[in-house]
Amino acid sequence: MAAVLLALGVACSRGPADPVQALLADLKAAAEARDADRFGERLASGFEGPHGLGRAEAITQVRRYLAAYESVAIDVYGVAAERDGATAHVRCAVDFSGRARKAFGLEGLLPPSAAYRFELDVSDEGGTWRVLRAQWEPAEADTQRSGS
Image (tube, one colour):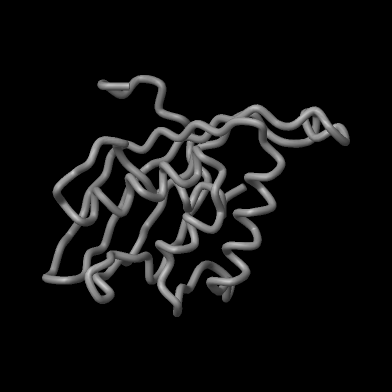
């Protein structure tokens, strides 16, 4: 589930001018479209996740999770980015909700919602911003935040 939410280190779906916001918006859109390949395009070739998770393994996990859901919705908030030229350190919270597929009893096994806090290191690679490193941890959904 957490790997899916990486796709979700993601912000508004409007076309933001800031490249970090654009990266987050692309990840969000890919997750909501349940498109693991599109999501994977925004991970750097040397992507590093928790416990040695590499790019190929992350995309495989995302593909597996997204395939298990009929629909996915992502809400990203509390985005804080510390930019340094062509790199940035990004912190954000992500709420995930989805409707599991009814086939194979997945609807009873998969959670309908989850919340995580993410820390991402992102960078411009030849004109395209990608996620270099990601860490995440479970969080409580923030139902009291404004603007949602």
